[in-house]
Image 1 (cartoon, chains in turn green, cyan, yellow, purple):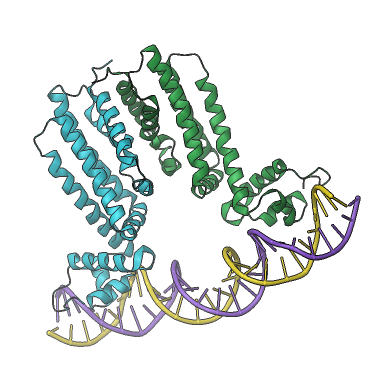
Image 2 (spheres, chains in turn red, yellow, cyan, purple):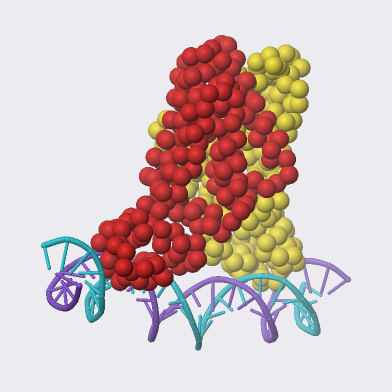
Length: 198
Length: 198
DNA sequence: CAGCTGACAGATTTCAATATCTGTCACTCC
DNA sequence: GGAGTGACAGATATTGAAATCTGTCAGCTG
């Protein structure tokens, strides 16, 4: 396995844990397995993570953060707010769909992990709606969107598009016609954001 | 139990099955239990339902149909399309939320049943989006809504409100602020439906 | 001394034997 | 004669004993 000569760092443990999860799945991945993969005793792992739950939580956070970082690039882009919003939602959908379709077992593994780590997921969602808020605020500033509360609008948009990013819908992402459905929902939402206030 | 003098009918079996499911939950409800509750041998149950799966499917269909029937009353109402749509979505949310909050175990039971009966659920969703389509078509006719494809718009509205009727979100229906979230999403969708086509 | 080890207690999981259930069918009994 | 029965084979679920895992900590080691 990995050279035990290197110092044991939290980072290395997280990498080994991802590998063990990939190999054994969420139900059978033990911290003994992680320790074995690193060539150390399991007591050493507990020196860096208080509990198995904390270790799994850290792995979950890493995974979610990677997605959030990719999307942040789009927010920083310099297109029209409407196109930015479209691109952001499409990228979120595409990222999730790709992960789910590419390696269904690994995706199922992370679905289990997110289910048991509500707090981390909550922070991740707050992060994503924060990104959306920035896009919508920009659109409100330029007059493209007419919304009084960009943060509330961002939450509404995020929730309304749940079908295209929430793991509980993963099995429907390969059905024929999802792309049309996605476009229909996004079009409807953007028309709603753009229409002059009642 | 029920008087065994009455003739054994599919209807009576379905009622007994609902009772057994309520008592034992989806995992431990057996057709032997159902037969016992009716005072007959389990062979008799198989005379009316080919398999246990078919029995559970029939129970699921009954349950979903009851909700659909309640909502159909709203579609037949004579308010403004916009208000009809609001009322319909609110009634759907309220019905689901009430069931989930009132008797969480029974709701969990039916969640399991719907998970294993994709076909029946698909038909139920087709039924509901059909109802939505009628409301939206009425709105398109009266000029309240400007949509070119009412059926597609209905599907989009149904999917965009999934957070407020899909069982996978049930645990979030008691969180503070859901009502505001519901209103925000519905308002956004109605603005989208109402805005003049781009 | 700082990081690591490995034995340990209690909790959890596995596994195989045992019990129960599903679905069938030749039969009974109005 | 047609609704209902109950014994049966194969599939599935339950159970409890044995194995493994989690989390701790006194002590080793470099």
